[in-house]
Image (cartoon, rainbow, N blue to C red; front, side):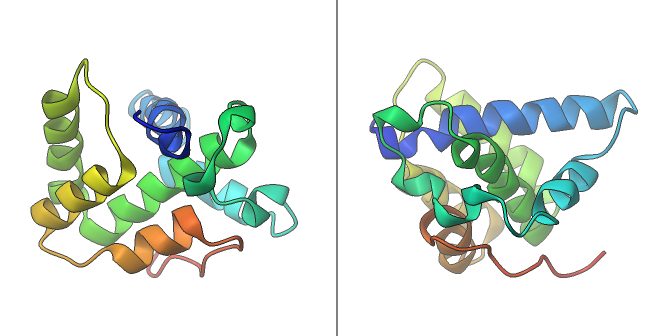
Amino acid sequence: MTRWRDLWLNEGFATYAEWLWAEHTGQGTADSAFKRLYANAADPMWAYPPGAARADDLFGAAVYNRGAMTLHALRREIGDDKFFPLIRAWTDAHRYGNVTTQEFIALAERISGKNLKGLFDAWLFQPRRPAPLAGP
C-alpha cells in the first residue's frame, strides 16, 4: 500500500483469500461469509469506511471484513470470468510494489469494461451499510 487509506488493499485481500480458500476446500463459500457479515446491520464497521483508514485502524473490522466484502461485491458485479483475471493481473503488476485504491479501481474498470465508481464509493468511502447485492 502507498498510504494508510489503502490499507484495505492488504487486509481486505488477505481476508478475501481466506474466504476463497474455504470455498475451494468445501468449508463454506465466499458468498456465505459475505451474507453472514452483511446480515449484521448494527455492526460498527458500517460507520467506518475502509477507504478512510488511518494508522490506528490496522486491526479494525472495516479494513478486514468490509474490505473483503468490497472484493466480493466486485466479483458479483463483474463475474468470475473478469474478477479472477483482474486479481491475477493486479498481483502480477504490483508484486513487490506500492499501490493505491485508485489504481485498483482503474484496473477493475479497464478489465471489466464497466464504470465501477458507484460500487467502490458505496463499499469503501461511505460511512453506512451499502445496499444489498443484486441477484442470488
